[in-house]
Length: 302
Image (cartoon, rainbow, N blue to C red; front, side, top):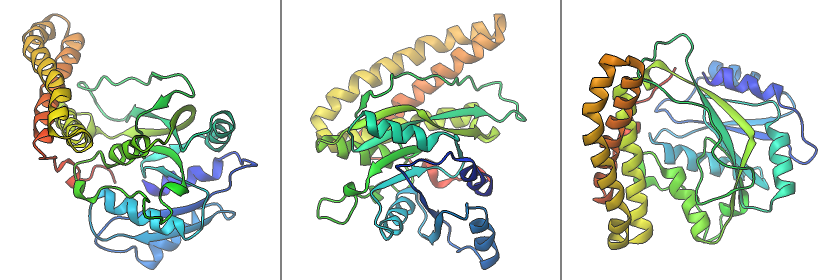
């Protein structure tokens, strides 16, 4: 999977204002053997400096922090993150360069487009690719799936940011990280022309996975909200969301079951939405009680 993504670097249109070096973080107990490491580095464009770093302690925030430490050795002006299952659009560098000329910001967040595996059956998946914001929109947080941020945010000063390692397997450490950026007065802007694409594997399109992920996302969001606002303000923020999601789930499930008989696709889509609302509500309750999920203990992909 990562080999395929590295090849996409070769197709990037060069930018006059941005040059790239690469860090690959292997978050596995075992380090790559010499043959694997050599093969991966051979896929990187010859003009690009590349390093493979190893973080044997499992968990997304540990891997991200190790990647930051490795990146800082190159004394960068900016640091970008993408996931290992994503392919960069050929004009990604150009789009980010143009965004930096248009808007002064600490963070530039690109658009990740997700597409179902065409070889897989997905009767319970109804996701669509749709841009919901105009270019330059300021955001309260961001994800590391497609982001470029100033190295000054993490450059070793006393206030330098790192990903929250208390949230080892819950997910949401990227959201928490970038909330701290904006809470401290930083700016994040939306760059829809800076595109990465990912293929959703069959294991992530099941009803069970979507429901559990909805719960995990909600749990992480509530956990972050509690730490940002305190228990009282967090409860006031979370309670209406929990109530509306639970009511939506309870009222929609019976309707969706009837629809499945009459209009199967519409019924399944409505049922998925209802189930996700229910799991979202339960997840928010768990997160508000400081019990984030262990959703990312299981790895999906090859």
